[in-house]
Length: 224
Image (tube, rainbow, N blue to C red; front, side, top):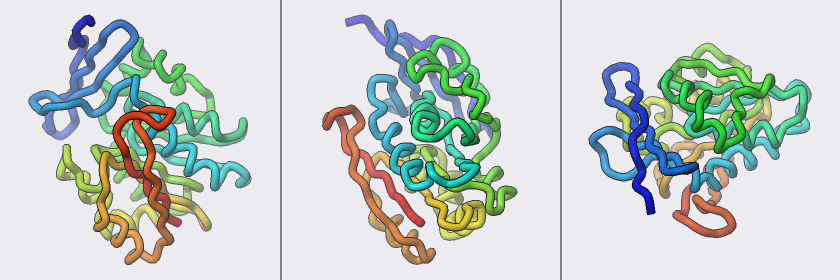
């Protein structure tokens, strides 16, 4: 089998390192320079799809539905959200790394069907925390796939998104009866309790990285 080869790198704003984009034929992988393992792979996106499907199922019938995706990644959550919602929906994507947006405009975008070209999509190159802070009552659903989940394994700064204060900001950004969906690489009982302490009802869903029923088990929280 051919080797995955690096084809580009992208700086993470704030001097927080670099991302690597690797390719083998039609397979792409994103990794962090200097760290083992990979963040995502175009062959393993079942849980990213499920993040959008679970959230959008609850809000798709809302009038003028507007949702926020935190983290563009390889575009699969965005693509699933667009597929789940109607023609009048608006999907806002907050992506911190400009290079990731450019990768999705280039050859990487083909894996998810170039969802950023959909007229219902608005890309904001900014930290999702900042977008939430100025978006009171703006979204029917907020879907977060930032870092590896609530533990903030990659960037310690991500803890502010999943802290009690971060959850307050998320709740302010949701419309009445809105829903929060959070992706995680693993279990985190402490985060479930944090959601409950914030006054939210919580569901935990175990989903597979690869469908049907294959690959690593990932966690998705729904909270409302």
